[in-house]
Image (cartoon, rainbow, N blue to C red; front, top):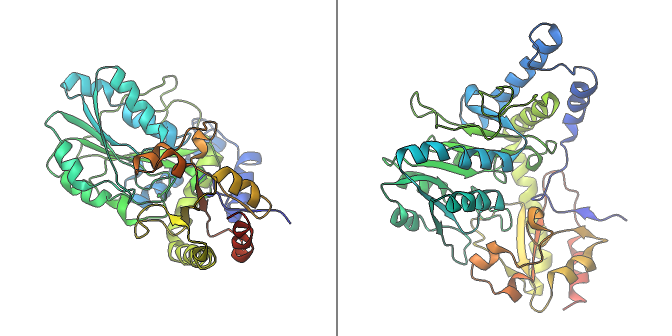
Length: 377
């Protein structure tokens, strides 16, 4: 018996209904969307523009506000570093983020800090969520950008983006969110027009790896003054050069459309899996990480007293495939910066595992999982 994959926050399986689309646009309709002299290129461009509409529809944006990228990491870098020149020109060098962001936000922030920007990193408590009052207190007249994730990748905790956006009403600071974990899953939040920049990753939404997007919303008629990080071709409104991966973009668009169409059904499936997991595991008295009223239905971060996460993952590897943190920092054996920011000690953080499933996950024999854990306690 092979293990059941329960690490969907790291990456999701490809939506089966989209396999044929991916293959067709790779092997048959392989035109370059930038080629204007023949039908192959014209059809490729139509496919890309349709996908742009599909992605935009999820967040209530316009077609021309969607810039395709290689994924959320590139989108985050473009959003944060691409605004540097305008910030310097205007003399507004104060940035706000949180202590629990993905490294794809924290590391660009560190680069800006080294270049003379001042970065305020908002703390969180054991809930795993930012207190909106902390943003209000941190705002200054020279605040240029606020970057706060939609959903934390390690804990599954939703951040109070709607409240944070209201605090920014009347303030000119740009609001960016890393929506890699919530795009197409937590729908209403991202439709707030106060969100200026939204980073999206295809492989967190049942599309392939290597594709994503940055939504760049206008304020009236003005776009955020982004500058490209690379040059050479002028694609994507000059912000992201390079031949567009038409097949990947098309599947991302189709995945986005399916996420909206099947949203209620997917939530119900994930919620049922969660209920079964908790029913089996709670008698073992685990510590649940984060405010569970804020946690997405497909994520469970927990720890067992006296049981190291590595030992737990090894013991369960023939039953379920789970993780003990972000896949993007899996090469590091230091305790999670997210969990430490929530007040856990290094020892406590090293006990935590993340279990994350999706609507495509098969039913899990949670009793067998619980029985195996019981032998370790």
